[in-house]
Image (tube, rainbow, N blue to C red; front, side):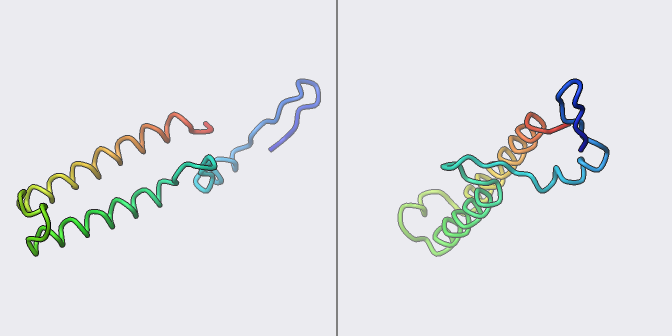
Amino acid sequence: MEYDQRSKELVLNDRAREVEVYMEVVAEHDVSWPTYYLGLGILEFIVLFAAKLHLFSIQLLDFEFWTWFFLTFFLVSALYHIYNGQERSLF
């Protein structure tokens, strides 16, 4: 990074792109993407486990339904994550 005193601007050099991967800015009460995916995975595990054992009202919908539901949920989440990441990209 270089500082241009005349224009009073910071100018990023080529190496700044290498750092962007590590810069996930999360607001104080927000959830980071890794935490979101972990929570979604844990929820999926619990629901599929309960569906497989026919527990609670989860048994009203079969195991295959829940599998497709969470697969779609993960796909939509990943697409949103990509879209959101491009919007906030430094470059």
